[in-house]
Length: 571
Ligand SMILES: Nc1ncnc2c1ncn2[C@@H]1O[C@H](COP(=O)(O)OP(=O)(O)OP(=O)(O)O)[C@@H](O)[C@H]1O
Ligand SMILES: [Mg+2]
Image 1 (cartoon, protein in one colour):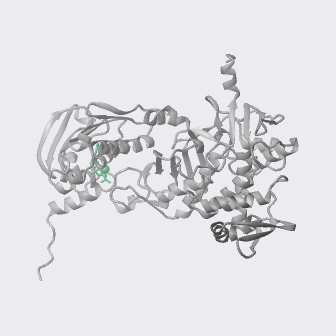
Image 2 (cartoon, rainbow, N blue to C red):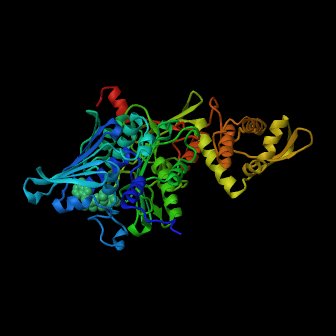
Image 3 (cartoon, protein in one colour):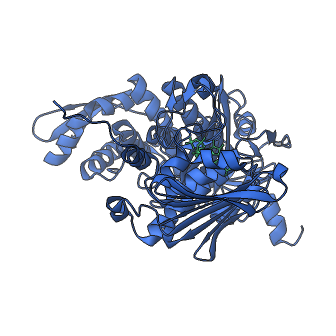
């Protein structure tokens, strides 16, 4: 008896605050979202001590009148929804009516605000630990400034969890970056200890916003994504595979303009790279997903950091496909100098291999992450000229807008990788039966590696059986090209699998396919006949991702005509 009590409001508020306000960056996020919801066009964020001494967010939005300003700090006070029905497809960042109350409960909060109609008169509300201490008339123009001081002063346990000043500052900047990516039409400025850390003026060009947030160089590494499937559309940018690095990747997801976290969707995007990335590297991705409001529930996380999709599988598929298509066109190939060769692989396929075309690539468009994109002008018609081989290693040919240089080994690797993946998934390739079986001696560890991958060997065309001792006999072998050396390929493949050369690849099929492709592909230094060159190009352009090999290196490098002209002083 008497063990259960109803908690006092002050405790309830602190508990609720814990869910919404984890660190200064959460305060920044909530306040900036409020400013955006208020229709601000200019938002300034000021930090002191990483936000733990002060977070101030000022905007030129609609402001609040005196009554609303007092109400705003109460729990479940919101102007944004009226009933639970409004939750479906809610278009404002906020809707829970909790953020200000939660922040106020664990800080000293000062709210200064004014509406247009009050002609220069506004209100200042001061609250300490959620309790309103004073409400004053002040002079101010339209808009709102919220200052949050001494965060967690009454929750010492929380204060202890704060990390270094630098990492709190970084998290706060990240929170602003996310929203700045979503809203190009608003200018954002973040000042920490008097230093401007972020300055993003309003713009209509996503490229400009990206440059303002991350620098020009990063913006140039990105390829546009623009894909729609049914009611789902995916737009944004993905990093060119060869530019992906082991650390420091950026992964930003938005759904209907709202940032959210979703590791599974990031993984789906990575799957879209089809092994074009070195397994140790991670690509940067910025993807904005749009879908009907009723297909996504944004009210599943106290800080709205996660969402729930009604049909997650469809969304994952759309994301993966969107990324794969973005990497497919020739523009996605690495370029010498600046600019890129403006033509598409679809034209390539038509030119190199009439009738072989694996389907037209979707048109690449540029524009804003969320707004209407304008499609790129149609490309000049034309072929690929006469390809020639140089250094017995590269294939060079003219394109409508420049020169393309293909690495014959990388290209063939891409071709064989995609073929092997298809075979591994469907469970079989055409093998060439040998009149005289090959006998191969392996080391014990190699024999074990072979046994372990036996089914995969069979799928790509190696029919082999253990013959007692450490001997394996090959009855049938794949036949990827006329100069294929089956014995050498098999030995190298077994050795790679044994020594884990491709160990970073977690997916067993991908690892095997990549290893096989690498070992079976024609090598650099191999002279090719003109017909073989054409055959290789036509197969390459029938691939899903022609411009990239399977280690994060380019298979094609382009030298834009404009770059030549610049170098020769013709432009
Ligand atoms: N910068 C601002 N400008 C104008 N009105 C504001 C501003 N910040 C808050 N408000 C008003 O105060 C209300 C409460 O804000 P609060 O952030 O607590 O809740 P919310 O945004 O409605 O929902 P959520 O808890 O999901 O953020 C808002 O609904 C809005 O009417
Ligand atoms: Mg809010």
